[in-house]
Amino acid sequence: MAKITFLGAAGTVTGSKYLIETGGKRLLVDCGLFQGSKDLQQRNWNPLTVDPATIDWVLLTHAHIDHTGYLPRLVAGGYRGPVYADAATRELCNLLLPDSAHLQEEDAQFAARKGYSNYKPPLPLYTIAQAQQALTRFQEIPRADTFTVSPEFSVRTHDAGHILGSTWLELTITENGKKILIVFSGDIGRYDQPILNDPEAPSRADFLLCESTYGDREHGTGSVPDALTDVINRVAKRGGTIVIPSFAVGRTQTLMYYLRELDDAKRIPKLPVYVDSPMAISVTDIYARHHEDHDLDFTTLEQQGSRDPLNVLEVHMTRAVEDSKKINDVTSPCIIISASGMATGGRVLHHLAKRLPDSRSAVLLVGYSAEGTLARALQDGAQYVRIHGQEVPVRAEVVELDQLSAHAGRSELLRWLSGFTASPRQTFLVHGEPSGLEGLRAGIASRFHWPVTVPAYLQSFDLNT
Ligand SMILES: [Zn+2]
Image (cartoon, rainbow, N blue to C red):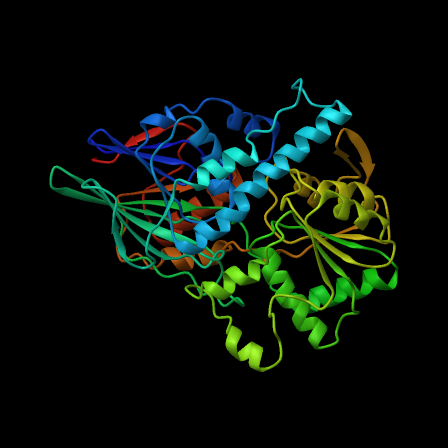
């Protein structure tokens, strides 16, 4: 009897993990980290309700940490099977998982020095060595083709248009000669955006898991280049700094793409851009090697004299902690792009602690800010925030630029869902906060009249009914 269990991203946006069981075999779709509130983060430390050693396969939709960041814990906990991912996702994970471990080691060391952690001594959730160990489990699967995992499972991947390598999955379960088709949306991206292809349309599913991040909201419709031009000129004129919390892969490339265009068009002053991330390898190389889901034409751009379409003129990639600290000494206007994206940890915290009290500066929020994160507190207009155990006054301007979001807005999610030619037997809404889940449920009810369930954390459902 086939069964699904929601081990994460149920009633919340992070920790994506869905366990599918049939004929005594276990397959996990995505293996994400919980991020945000202390309660959510605590789940990363609790033992998984299923013994990792008893899981046979892991399948990934894309490389973001809330879909992959638990893998080092899973492997450390005894998982010995393959981690199936497409080539771009694998390459991005080669950067992201050690980076995630690195951020956690840095945070633990910092907490130990400052003595503010509840744990004595503060430990990282996993180490760089454990992240490297997890990477040895990766095996590439083809894009846009059917891959047979086992007699019970086969999968076909489709473009999701969210980040490089991102896919939505059609998983076919074969049980006693009967087939069940489950579609996992992964994270659905945007339509008509620069760089990435549009999400591919689905057609049918017996069961559907659909993300609901922006299920209740549309993105701003204003022009991104105009908004960036405004804020950069405004802040530069008053001598401030722009801090942009952003994961180093995905949004950072889109930002760099726009900044280079604005720089070429001489619409913004020539400010130094610090990409403060331990990842020294240029992600541009990964884009250049993987043309599967973007429309950047590197050859033509090269012929036009733009050697690197994702880099602005004065860009500094900082890997070493000492170089990162030196950015604190920069007093002239500059742009600092630093992880983590929701300001839940990492080096961006140091930059925020330094720049938030300065009314000349600005913080640019360019992605989704989950409940309980520092980015959400800033978005909600907090006067003071707590960083590394200190009260920090917020005098800097906080600017939301959610047009840069990598997530489909409400109408884009409904547009993607309109690809289905018939109602799935059951639609499970996941990867959303209560307002997003309710918003999408209402949208599906009024537009498609499909049966919809919002599963609870750890809830299981029989897939034969
Ligand atoms: Zn994502």
